Image: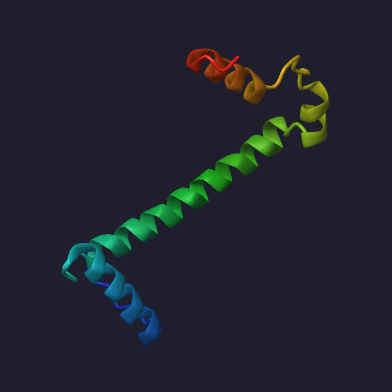
Length: 92
């Protein structure tokens, strides 16, 4: 791995350094944390590219169509759960 010099606003750098110090009790993990952040950024970019590809290839189902095709439930899950709890403690 090579060495890289990057110019970062001093206020931002000190804040980041302080967060690492709070998290680990030392600043020796700075390089690893920066590497994790960059990898995370690249992973997010890869996911977005994949979603764009899937959208171009297969398209997306509009939310309105999903709502239209969603089955109607005969009862409320909350109501069923409440009844089960009440039965368990003998309230009904």
